[in-house]
Image (tube, rainbow, N blue to C red; front, side, top):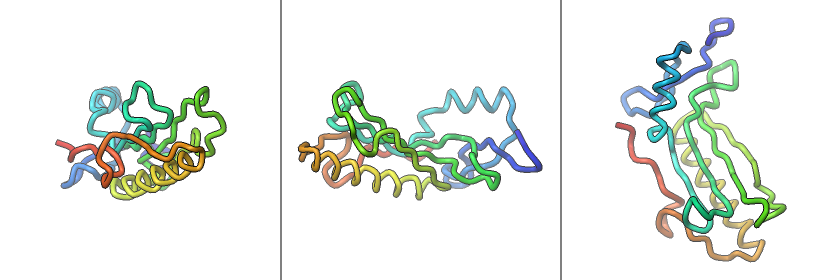
Length: 144
């Protein structure tokens, strides 16, 4: 889709496979985008470990469309919280958007650090998650 010459849909491409490349919307693009979800994940983090029982999840993905007229903000980091078990978590439902894969990875790390601080403040001093203690979370491998 274009509006006054601006593209709103993107795929990951370029030499590194991580650069948003403008596209014209069509059925083929939409199908490819939906099928290729695994290559869109920048990083995920869960507290405690495991997607099935997470109190807090931080997910950073390439969203494939721009919310701005200048083609920016094609990556999104979201904080999702099990509000029944962890009510009033200050970062619940927060969304942060960035322009590049590297910015998205840095934003993910920053939001995970904020979530850890809030969890520690709430009395949950240890957070088990995917990844190691040195790694801020599971990172997607380079796109193929």
